[in-house]
Amino acid sequence: MSTPFYVSPQQAMADRAEYARKGIARGRSLVVLQYADGIVFVGENPSRALHKFSEIYDRIGFAAAGKYNEYENLRIGGVRYADLRGYTYDRTDVTARGLANVYAQTLGTIFSSAAEKPYEVELVVAEVGETPEGDQIYRLPHDGSIVDEHGSVAVGGNAEQISSFLDQRHRDGMTLAEALKLAVQALSRDTNGSEREIPAERLEVAVLDRTRWQKRKFKRIVGNRLSRLLAGDSDAGEASETDGTDGAGPSGVEKTDPEAD
Amino acid sequence: MEANTRSTGRLPAAFLTPGSSSFMDFLSEHQPEILPGRRQLPPTQGVIEAPHGTTIVAVTFPGGVVLAGDRRATMGNVIAQRDIEKVFPADEYSAVGIAGTAGLAVEMVKLFQLELEHFEKVEGAQLSLEGKANRLSTMIRSNLGMAMQGLAVVPLFAGYDVDRDRGRIFSYDVTGGRSEETNYAATGSGSVFARGAMKKLFREDLTEEQATTLVVQALYDAADDDSATGGPDVARRIYPIVTVITEDGFRRLTEEESSEIARSILQRRLEQPDGPRAALL
Image 1 (tube, rainbow over the protein chains, first blue to last red):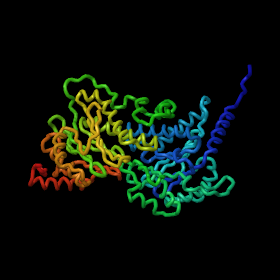
Image 2: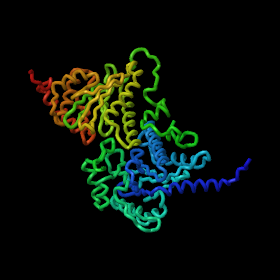
Image 3: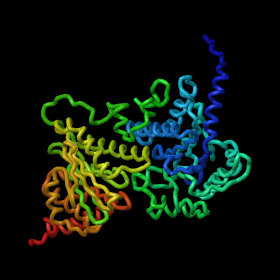
Image 4: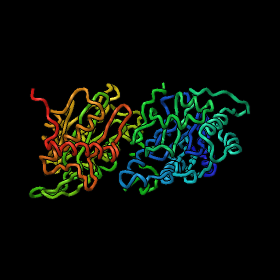
């Protein structure tokens, strides 16, 4: 009969953290930035079916790096949590802070439970306020902690380097086009410092736009509008919102955008 | 009661179970007691007094569909509410108008809206118009027990079918039976009179503006002959709710627009109280 080796709790936790971090680092990074009219999510994602960003509720968006099946599960859990809460109480009672807490508890319990493998995910939960001061961005690492972020945040493989790049250059009140360009610049930097080109088709971009008149503020930016914004046309953001062709109805439901294909 | 009050504060297993995109399915697994259809009424004698909403009308026109409702809720012979709203957007391309027990109906609409929104967020795509109509059917059927005690909910569902590029109307009965209506439909106590009016006024080539006028004419006729349907109330500035669904999505006419239509109809009815006359042959 073999005697089990003694592993100190510190070592066990360090091993689990290492395992989770490695898993997250394999995924591509993504960034979340505040701009004048809201919050923009930008990431490199070759797939158009498997989203990294999505809508949780009226003013709340979700971003995740790491293992798809794990964060997809958490995303659906979050949508269920938000919808149930809004149904039981009121739509205004669903907050990013509440959701971030539930996510943190979930990730934390899984991380410290020896029976489960730690989730290899890092989440961002963002809520757009009536004014830029009301914006909230929470980063949720794999171990169940919550980091309250301001201005800009990066998660995923190359997060630290991208974060410091963004911290130096991000400022309050940027336009959507400026914020988007900064995000793409940050994402294009490789670990070894060299830069590479990320074509528009490989970018996934979404916004929580406080100027939308619909109650659901989340919107994906795709196709021509994305190209126009990347080309530096600062009007592209507002123009297509007022012409009513790519906006959503009063319920804020996203329309199948003809520009998407 | 909800997620974060349970033991560890983490999301309960039901929240993280993959599979269903339906909020109602999730509720029936996780918290069946809050689903409206699961409630059991104790046996009661006679009819339960609760406000009832009345007439809803819908008409299609090339390019879309118009759904409208009057503003009255009655309880027996009493007017329970003068300004009740009975037409709601279900999602971007559809709307639902409710007749029957107002309290239950409003809750049903709230759950229906959430069901569509939930599906869309989870799946990243909208349900087809048929799919939406079928979900509503299921919800009405689950209310059958209540309906048999006099608390029926009978909605009218209208939407723009983006796959077929036209407006469509679905009507329901208390058992959840669903039928697609061509051209026009009405539900509620004044529906008989409204349908008569629409039958005579409907044409295939209505414009959006004509269609909105038509539904207000029909509601006027319903209010004329049915005590439970309210006509335009000029003194209190309460006008019918008129909604239009086209390729561009759902739009509710502003109060100015609907008052404009109602006032011009009233003006004409001062000369011709029975409204426009159709040709005899």
